[in-house]
Figure (cartoon, helix red, strand yellow):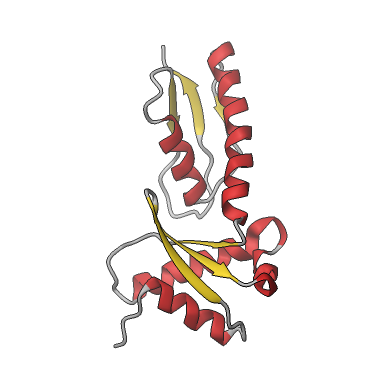
Length: 149
């Protein structure tokens, strides 16, 4: 069986969609990010990033079936994820500050695994805040944020 790198697998997927875009790999602390470099491919972001999320999910499922080492790959187009991540964290921080000041726990909106990882990592060293999410096979789950007494 052919074993593709994450970059090669994404290039094959894009070619099957009729898109000949350059894919650039970047290593980040959270793992590899594959950037699709093609302005014409921006339609792959979809409404609220859903198509991009589905493309990333499919890529990761295909990589897992290829028996590559269990790496979680992020896919981005035109810096969309980075911009969304900044906006996303601003909203989460506002809610966390509410928990910090009132002491009342908050359940955040449902998130995919990548977003949950960002939230948990952002507050893992915060001595006043605890984040938790339920286990289970669902793709989207809610995080509970509580103040540590």
